Length: 327
Ligand code: SF4
Image 1 (tube, rainbow, N blue to C red):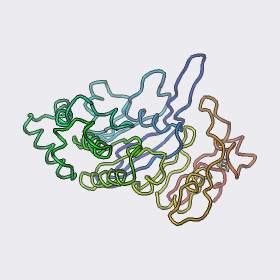
Image 2: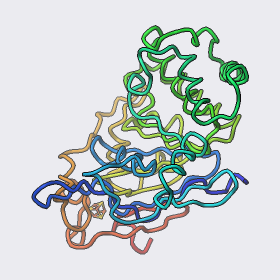
Image 3: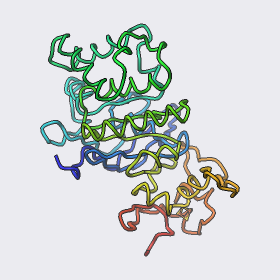
Image 4: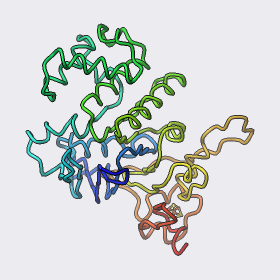
């Protein structure tokens, strides 16, 4: 697999919460996103914009009232074949998890079993997915901890005996022990202070370098994306509205919403007053017509409330905004 090989390809994915009285919450609406081998892609946007629902849809961790309405999620399997995640049987899906795709939901304590030592939690994964005996599994776990710079002594600990940062790094080590091609990490650094945040980012980058693992990092924290992501996708009200190389997007955001997110970031030594985004995101049960950002957009034009902007390509950037038409 070369570095340009796609490991994940989502095309026109729509996933809605279908509630009583015919209410449809369009949490993910016509989203396309691809991830290459060894790439770290950031998924950014305010809370409630559909980031977590998109991750759960990719992982096929959905149950009513959430439903995949349209689109395709394809992953590259270990033998190089592309598989349609929603075409798999339950048994095939189970086999693919951990070995091809791994999902780290928000909050390390919700992932770890509080009543079981870390050693047992690693061994459980080997029991489920590995084909080695207990001694060999333990040897591989210790070797992995050494490679990742984690103390072997954590194996004897219960989750509550570890610091928040160590717990989160342990969760990442657990999620990657079977060498999946891609890891979906939802808010991996939330509730951690800056020092622990850096430790988590360094560990993710190390895993990518050592094992060629790809990541989607979900976070509302633009600072995390700046530090960690190669490419960034910005999501607003259920849609991706800008995708591009992280440095380029931070240097020159092209979508007005991206500009608002970046302008609200504090800068070291900056004396300029922060300009945050005004207004609130729309209800996903009844999103505004045309561009969903138009009620908050300082640059809106007449066309914006009437017609949804398609993606315009600017260099290697994709931007869904009428301002980019013909540029
Ligand atoms: Fe603003 Fe119009 Fe662009 Fe939407 S399409 S972001 S309303 S300028």
